[in-house]
Figure 1: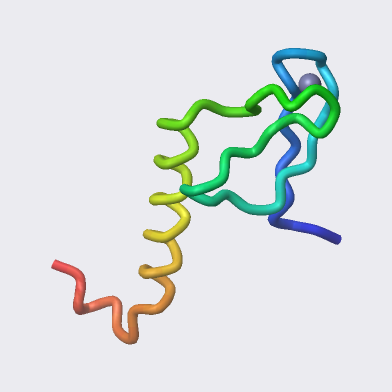
Figure 2 (figure 1 turned 135 degrees about the vertical axis):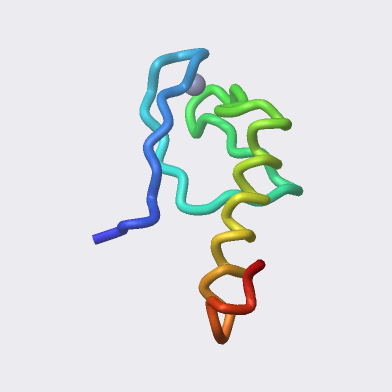
Length: 66
Ligand SMILES: [Zn+2]
């Protein structure tokens, strides 16, 4: 089971690509036609969101949030 994998359908050729993780430095591209699967802004937003989730779960005590 790969719970974190995400399926994105290529807008260029319609092939389903399995994305395991995002990176701000590396845009996911279609394995078949190399068409970018998401645009850069979307990629950065997702990477930031993922990092926020990690930070949240790393908090020792939820009462630290104000
Ligand atoms: Zn494609």
